Length: 255
Length: 250
Image: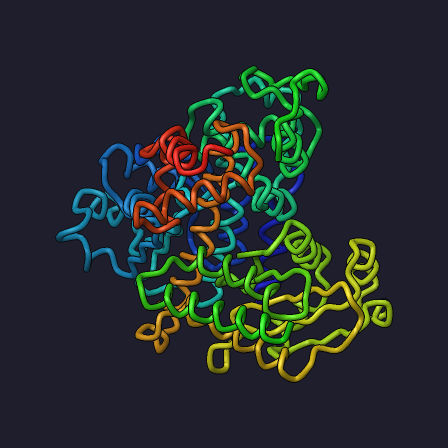
């Protein structure tokens, strides 16, 4: 299967999901269907502290993933911390030094290979996509390529689940796909994110979370809202919902 | 006039060679390179596209907002000379945009409506790979002279050298990491511009100048300063205060 086919197959699996959780579950199941792995899960790890398993292809995958949080060690945590993939083709090999408790627990369930791919939002690691195999051995080329693509797509539902102001989501229709991801990877979005960092005293990842959530409640794309912010047409000091200000009243802001 | 241009060319290359020799910052250098293109070539604007490891193009540097928009438009509409140049690995010279509306039915009218009449795109080449493309946008109709073609390729080669450190060039994976690092530092730089623009009530271009001045005067890399501002290790107030002290007009 070619990259383009994988890209569209994985994205299609998520489209139309009713919630971030459902989108993540669907993405994990698509990984199992398209990449020939036995299981997949997505976990959120904001600011280095893992917050938990969030999407999974099956109950077993969820359990595998959750071992990392109960035991405080595992490839996903390392992948998020270092921002690089952690590939373990044979858990019995690595068990001695890296994650003795995790490896033991997972192998007892019949899983022998784990691959953790970091999920990043605007270069900030926020979580990981874990792929599990019963058989020993490295990922196939297709599985690796598809896994990296899926890790990119996983950023969208992760951003939504990180949204502490959950109420913003209630009446907003979140969408999951390449278009939404591309909209978040534009220069104006990065610049507007910077303004949010300054105005609300929050981290870059949190700024992106709020930008996306606010864009949805306003029925705009992230890029459109970013322009409004850059042009100072949005009052950032009103944290709950940055209300639009009268452009004339605020004076000239240069730029 | 010719002497003046000659002088600018030498100056541009000396400046680029200087920064290459003295622990440069790739993003900063490429931004200057985009501006140099406008000074030494017969073009009005220049933009630089770099591919990530999935082969998707990103705007890494631009001499002006107009240049940035022309590059972004090509990425969004998936057509245009810079995109074609990247995919073919060969230069694309368009002396008259109104003659290529069939080839690029969306890009050509867009560029014309933005006031441009000619476009030239030069590949960033590393052996048999193409890393990206340098887009040169003109406001006068006409072919690029042989000298300008050679000069354009030379500037694109400098960009490649800046992106890929020589000792690493043999290792494809290390090259990919360096290119990704350059793209990543661009993200932090844009975010830092937003922070400084908001706190200092400035335009994003002014914010860029403020950040660059702070970096140069403190002998820091622009990327380090940008990361510091975004992570709030370095406050925007400090950076702004420095710029104000240097030039009270800000």
